[in-house]
Amino acid sequence: MIRESVAPLAGLPPGFEIDLPGRGRIFIREKSGPAGAPTLLLLHGWTATTDLNWFTCFDALSEHFRVVAMDMRGHGRGIRTKSNFKLEDCADDAAAVADVLGISTFIPVGYSMGGAVAQLLWGRHELRVRGIVLCSTASHFAEKREEKLSFFGLTGLAALSRLTTPQARAWITDQLYLQRKSEGLADWAVQQIASHDWRHILEAGSAIGNFDSRDWLPRLEAPAAVVITTQDNVVAAERQTELYQIINDVEVFEVHGGHNAVFAMKEYFVPTLVEACLSVHYRSSR
Image (cartoon, rainbow, N blue to C red; front, side, top):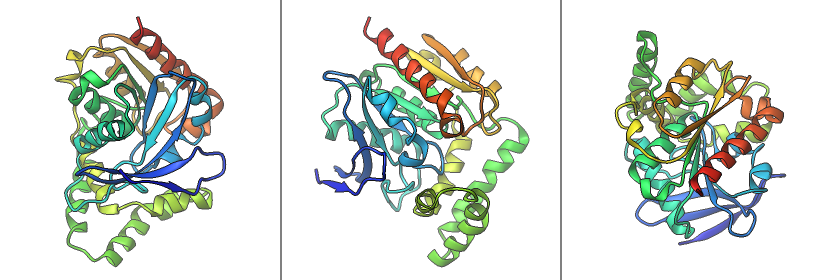
């Protein structure tokens, strides 16, 4: 393993690039908690990064837990590969991060797309998962006709991106995303977004549209917490509610905010997230 320090952003814990054997190089942030504290493994949402998704949460979570967060494939400083993006690979990357850091068991905390990855991590590495925290996410993301058409369009764009030059991909990225999504963001956040591998971002969107855990998630056994953002226009609150209804041992928490509540309503979201993580920890320790 090569563990290389990365200059920190103000207020964020130390960052490192590490090599995952046979998988590639990945960026993580890590903040130690109390001695002997369980580990949270933070998994960010689509088109975000560890820093963008979780910058409001590190300090509060580390009062109780060791906190590890990773950039997922194609996002920020996540693994770059010529193969297609798969949510399953992201789940296996997360388990490999735990292996490299010597972490035997952990609690995945997934936000939006990261919630899908956390579910897959639970399903594929069940003995490693002490419990799970799912935020602003669902067991499936596309059911209505218009939703399926939207994700189908991403599948086509992802295929097209493999055939275009890097310059053309950069232009498509700017037209489809950066101009609409970066307005009002700080410079560091815009730089994070611009650092994505946009072929993988498009493929990730397609993978999200095809994700569906309803057949197998009810069979898993571990304490869970679901944090619902009740005014969410990205993952509807009704779909977040459907998620917790198919999990066996679950406690539900609500934040009356939108999909960006993790930072836009941090004064409410962060304490709720801490409470959800502690709920899973206490129930997993019985």
